[in-house]
Length: 264
Image (cartoon, rainbow, N blue to C red; front, side, top):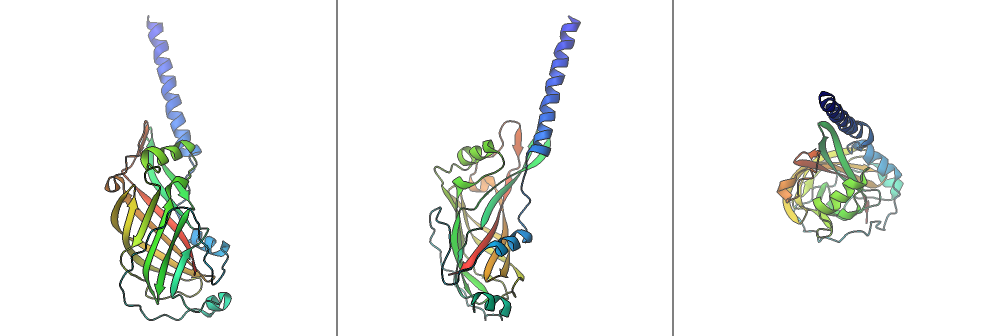
């Protein structure tokens, strides 16, 4: 009888070792979360993008969203670098800027697998939208993302994201619409950056909430790059908790983006 119980104890111990070991290997070795978007991503995308003045180049995935005009008094246009204008023929930043290929949006969620911490993230390049500039002020802006196109390094996670969590069949797109002007204070020289705060309506999972977050704008090669992160508490947007089984997630995540925009 003692030998019988000893065998059971050994079997249970071996199973625990396998579960814990497997969780550790997945969390620390197999799971490959992308680094957070940063300025280096903006620069790389602006360097890789091609510029065609006088024509828009935007993705066609997703549904369009009407941009609500924002009342503002345009600030005086700051001097623009001769390098930027001479290289592209662009003499003013005023007007409409369309989101261009190479733009990318992603989510980041901290998770724990049997006690081992890791990060889940997925990204999509299926983004449409535009913004309107007047001097140093962005007076209108919006973007729309096709939620079915997010991809991570794990197919099972992608299926959970599309079905149980975000229900993309019912809510195929997410949108952001600017509701207050963004004043960057100056038009940066070619390769320069400026920082500001953006406020607008973010719609996720069919729920719209007002959000305020920091953005960083870069002017380079006649293009504008916008970098930002929006904290999202899932319950605020009525998003089901992503946790499932032994995978436990925090109750919040980050919506991060790098937008590349070209003058229309």
